Image 1 (cartoon, rainbow over the protein chains, first blue to last red):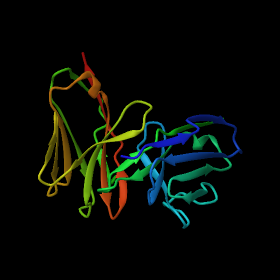
Image 2 (image 1 turned 45 degrees about the vertical axis):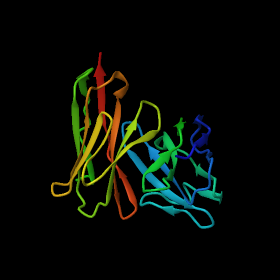
Image 3 (image 1 turned 120 degrees about the vertical axis):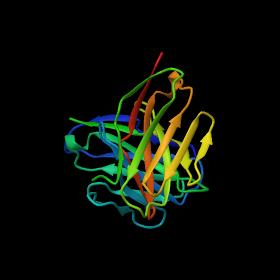
Image 4 (image 1 turned 180 degrees about the horizontal axis):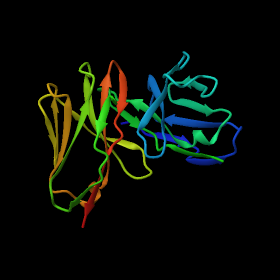
Length: 114
Length: 108
């Protein structure tokens, strides 16, 4: 499985500001995914990031709020824009497995918005 | 009705016991199934895929019942280190759907 790192691991931000989360993979992957996990909840897919094309967003998530970059096959960023306390969550990136449709996750970014 | 449902637990089980939990899915077009494990404040990690014929990995056995639309996970000879949240995951049309998880506490 791929080794995935995320930065920052955690942050406390003021409402109205933006935070960019970085996801780095140790091998080239076609698809990268961004999830959100709110306290006591399951994972919710925000968007799928493919290299060389715009990200595909799930229902309820929009590019203006969660812009995503995918400049190459090993790196992606997710920005949480104009944050409110409701954005407090863990944000995780993941990549697909080589042999199947399982996924492997980064360690997550724990965001608190005050 | 949620597409993937699990009993949230917690299941409090003495060390060495066998524990089983199920997950139901609502869409019969679901194609592949997984169990993930998530430790407190950590990311989910793939535990095992679930195949139609059932599969076993050491103390863990996973089974799929397509007719009744559920998957199960059985843990034998449970260890303290098995304490975690177990997430049921379903793939439908390349869309990955996570259950909310079942919390398991193994008691010494």
